Length: 334
Image (cartoon, rainbow, N blue to C red; front, side, top):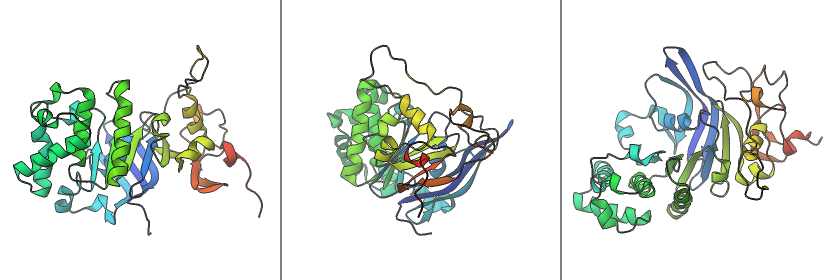
């Protein structure tokens, strides 16, 4: 099947074999991102967001069973020859993780860590790699880059460490950058700067970006498309504006209600989602959100809803028997 997407994921499934049995972490996920596009993947912890992207990055343990396909720029990611894999990850696709302290070696200076990938993948000399490292630190807006190169990770603030990690990810000019909760370990005052930086870099470098988060508010003004996940499955995908203007899935609606709003009167309680996420030790046979959904019926608890488009847009799809918004209205007869 031909696609204009830079990355095309089709019917992805990830199952972990554990001593207690199988864990069905991801089931039937299909999504794509085109060149220069920003895709936000949103959902609670345990919804399968990170596992989906780590499977594409080849970062899952050997106990993981992967089905489906992931095609990047014509290459089957799950069937890359060993020699190609060495210069694929970190070059064509790069990833930024949640905690910069776990991404950086505490006993190596920043220059050694930042130049290592360039010298390995591009064969740059030490001096050429160091010069490029200075350019990268300047690109990610780190002041006094010459000084920072000689420092250790513990000598930098959390925000600066994350900027260094972003610089490392950009070292080989990837076509796609995956940012997995990149502001989780940072102070609130620094989070916006990092998110704005990623958005600016994406536009400046014409790079595709996948931003993983549990917060719909984070992706509202920084992505073109949103994919909402729950219980290892896709609940809704749509252009970002449509997700907020015409929400189709009750889970997406519940996530929106849980976002703090400065216009809300003082003392107003947040509206949390009741219940707990599903136990992924059982193969999905019904809508995973049914036990927590106020619209659920017996049908929701006995069958998996198909993924279909809303009556108003072929780009807006959802998996629900009892959708919200315009999707709840019967399609006009032809």
